[in-house]
Image (tube, rainbow over all chains, first blue to last red; front, side, top):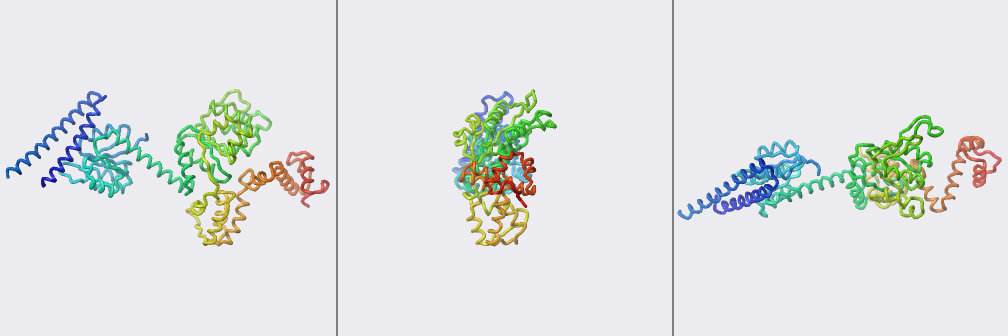
Length: 67
Length: 451
């Protein structure tokens, strides 16, 4: 995967995952505690996977510069 | 909103959770990957399919391939993706998706998609009506009927205006069929009854309520409980009858003749007339409050002469599944040039005559011959013929009534070989009426007719 493709993929994932986080956060209002717990768990997992993707991209860029 | 069968193709568990919340109340199933989506699409169970384009971290927009499959299964397919570059959006629409929404505002977007789907489904159903039940290509007629169908499921009374034979009863029945009301469609032609008989027909009666009431009988109001009561030729109803019916409509209960206990009936009223309602109210023939009660929504049906584009499609419709007809160019011109005073009813009669008695290829001469017969034969279904109605308009009602009386007396005299006593008994008329008719017809009073 070239850098352009990697960046395109990252942009897509950030947009998709942030959109999901935003919609999920809006749903937290008025949710029963069990549902709220499940939603928060999924949101945290989404946020972590996003952070992982950003880190992976950063590592990839660093690697390219060191070449 | 109707409960819809929806498939959501989405790999992300959080996005699935969000869609689940947005689609609460519908019958929703999920597919996490392309193979499972394919199986579910192929089952043709879903009416709407939401497709995420990227199914998995390494997927290269595999969701796009699902769009034509959903289309082939007759499913309304919607893409919801964060990947909304022009190139991707264009590709998705080219593959046949109906809607494309960027992720991030699901609470509004999902509802907008479902509304669009329902509107489209309703329009498709309406289109089928114009091909299968009320055949018309006339824009104004289609618009009027579509508007009426939007209120089919409501309690709103509907008034259908249109000349005889233009399809008023057919339209009333279609509205009833679309209403979702569990009861029956009950039609009555108010012009075909005297006031007493109409009251008995509408309200029903108990055995012995009047001379001749040998058995109790359920009236039309009760028969239409939870259904639709169609009052054809409502303009001919007497003021007294209007008062009684208005009370029954408003109170949803009434007393059958000879009964001291009320009956309850929750019927919806659709009425029809070929006359101008405001003019009838102004002339004091229709009570204002009654007219207000039965005129929730008014639809006008044009005579066939004003929608000649419907003539050939209607002929195609009447011969569907049977003997098909073909018309020579000159024959078509004759059909389209004719005024069709009996409207669709006359056209149907024309087609019946043509399919039975003519070669499949109809010539202009055959059209002329058939039109003359169809006009005569299309009329007896109506209480008054188009010709009689036109005569009343032209020469006045008194003159038309005299002609009507004379024709009936003459026919009965002929059938009774000129025996006047039998005519007086058959028609329950006085000698004064019989002699007045004889004088008008120029027949000597002392001589027998029909010999």
